[in-house]
Amino acid sequence: MKLTSTQHLVLTPFFHRLAAVFSEMDQAYQRASYHYHFHCSGCDENCCLTHFFHHTHLEYFYVLEGIGKTDPYLSTSLYKRARDVHRKSVEAMKQGKGVRLMCPLNQDGLCVIYNHRPMICRMHGIPHELNAPGRKTAYGPGCKAFDIQCGSKPYIPFDRTPFYASMANLENEMKQHLGITEKFKKTIAQMLVE
Image (tube, rainbow, N blue to C red):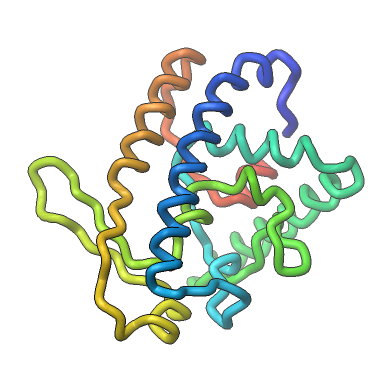
């Protein structure tokens, strides 16, 4: 699927605001990774092989915008890869197996829509916390590469809560504006084939 010019026009203000939220995320992640001296580069547990689900329509539209900025040959290749990854994922899940397939947007170890990558692709790897109102703080671990490189270093607060709240508010505002009522839960491959 590609965004129509009308869809793009309607979504552009939301894309600008999402880009600002993503910029804040990237800066916070860079500060935390600098503090730990964590370097993410091609580990065996490559997060691009992870069967991540994304939960916002806005990220879906933003991914489509990113693909739309690639040349037609590349975008055709991305959709073809997505169909292949999706088919293999469905087969693996039917057999009760875990899914470890390269993201269709990864080419030669790099994301071809890097500036348009979803939130989890920006935040994964570093230990974090979530502070939901009225609940205890929930802590999430770092990835395996983080544990190997930095596991013995003391935790510094890396609170994802403000970013999740900003994303939720922006998603709700966009859904209301567009009249979208259904929830969203798809992998990158699903985004490109369904």
